[in-house]
Image (tube, rainbow, N blue to C red; front, top):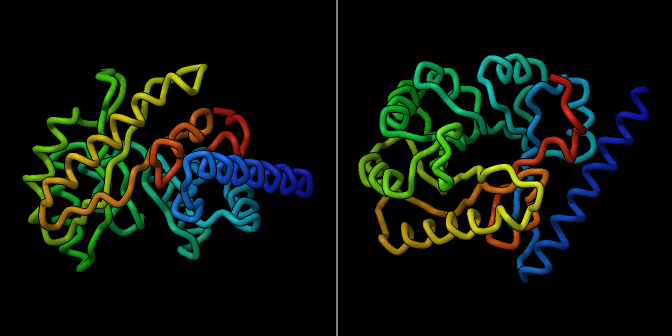
Length: 235
């Protein structure tokens, strides 16, 4: 069974990488500038290790407690990214566990991350989660609130804003997600033009298993892929 699973995860990863390369080629981009975040929520550590052996270098987790257990077992030989919603009361753990936090969605959370990072004497790299659909079921700020947050927290000493993240509505047709990717890129461009000190806009985290090719074509630098690598999850 282990060999079959290893082959399956390795084969899946190769297919994802090939699709990434093809999407980058269509957009005239260097595939080397696109990072693959393998989303491993609910995936047991044995299968995560198989993905690492197959070449995965970044893992994305949605829940602090689940991630903590996995990180204790697997260690920091690879990067760990927090891609799910982060509550302020979990920030003290997140700043220690994760190399990147994709889901900063308000001033209170940004300030709490900064405060906890200061206690640890470290700089935390974050992305701002932007809700472009207005869906109340999704976390994230509207574009206007994101601009306000950037101005409020750009002076914080232990948090580095490096880009934006979004999660469009679910569509059966990936092309329907494309307008949301375009809007995130355009928001990034507007922020860059303001030249706010202490704010970098190098990263766009957008695109998942069903639509990452369109995201790459529209400028994604990080894609968050779980199902296409690990298969359907059994919740």
